[in-house]
Length: 450
Image (cartoon, rainbow, N blue to C red):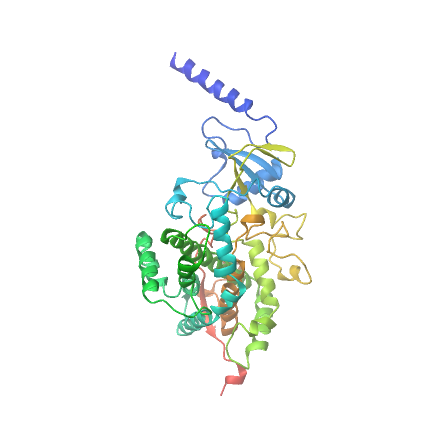
């Protein structure tokens, strides 16, 4: 009797699911309760699995992750229709409770609901915090932090060295030099720590504007900004945490993967070092002014962002109201995931997409600013990352210094083909599965020898 009842309930669930699927995008057959969760495994990266499924079901695919209706965007054409043609319809974010704590109940720029408050935050980020002028004002901090790290690495010249740990320490330092130690040592007390930092800044207000750090800028806007929505301490903490975590993780992950790829490709490594040393040998150091003359490094960074976007799946969007995409009905409140990793490896847009080849961007107009949907590591449309101008120098300067100041060797006689290039666990970003262990050999510029 019990088995018959369970079987009857199962049939009802299946029929109910079918009745809801009128004109939805294609996708795998769903199981009751778990939907499509059985298709995923912790041993196979989720962005790879979604790419495989999109090849079978198309660029707009319907999944059910448990009971959550989810649309997966797997081609540049579908991404363009979603983030350009129908951008307003998909401008919201889902609000999972798992994110409420770290976003101060969605008061940050990344997860704030689409609306006037989000527009105000975005304007503050673009105009006040992350403008080109403001980013340039942090130049001395970036150069000082990188110089300190280069001295640190030099002391280990000729010995095995965990470059991954140094990269992440460095980019966290560039993002928030004075906050680094306090936050890294007190993650569980981040709120208290950030509150303390805000209070310290308020007690030691600076009168200068050009060299104000991010906290001071936010406090000035709080006091004198004439804003539509008051900028509370909670809002300030949410923005600081966004910039600190997202900005640092993105830059660190990109530098780590770039170093991995150039080490794996000696031709590319030599070409990058020759260009850098030709420009900087007379100075004996790398600075941001001289980086304006460097071209090949920029190609390496583009190719790294193509092959290893820091977040292979963009932060999910949410459909604000029922709408149509690629001829299919998208239900209101559906979660939408854009597989930017798959777009950047689409063979219809990229020759040999799984090969690291920076020269593919030579004389190419394709860029990561959100207009080329086959290459959107920072997103596109209204929800594009506002920190692109902030991320660029925090990637370029450390990478240029690592390549200029050192020749690099693999430890223990390891061969290049044995260097592990697999993805690690899915988190804020997707880093290497294993830390990058190398032997740095200090380079002495000819002009400084003797």
